Length: 125
Image: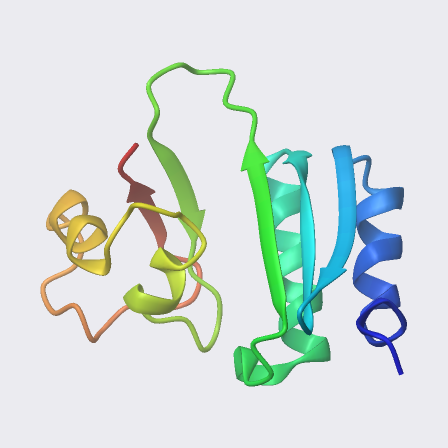
């Protein structure tokens, strides 16, 4: 089974969600999905990926979805979902570490190991 078959639901969702400049390619056993989308669509794609590959164990997908930010401030907001931790959230934002997310949210996070679903975290740009 090809990776495109394995992740057909994810590819279909990217298409139907209107990901711009969508490119899907398979190389060396990894499926690369590139394009641009809103933060909400990007989150939905990650949720679908996680459903298809719980805890992302297969490590056979690289999603490089850039978020078109209308604000210009560079800071984004992420809503914590069940099962999230700061390291997992940071993986969605290349170049941002869990420590930077923690520092940006010290007003609401006292312990980096204690975040909860529904919490809105600032992601530094």
